[in-house]
Length: 93
Image (cartoon, rainbow, N blue to C red; front, side):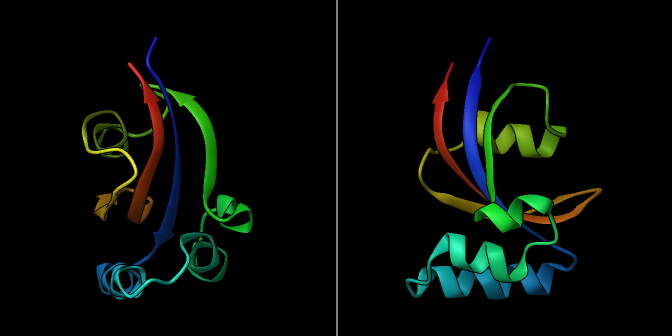
């Protein structure tokens, strides 16, 4: 079974997500921004979701984590929860 670990920042609007992406591009720390902006409980841990299996997250989130480049920031990704900025830390396929 494929597993991965990721950090993410969840916000309500695409505008907010794009603003955070800009801050990341300027060198701001992902964990600091997650603690400040993320509406997900994981925000308190710097956006850390720990390790999870393929299929545990909603499809759009899973697709990014299990198919896109590792250690690169992806987003905004829209799900029923809002807009995510996702960084996959590692993946075991």
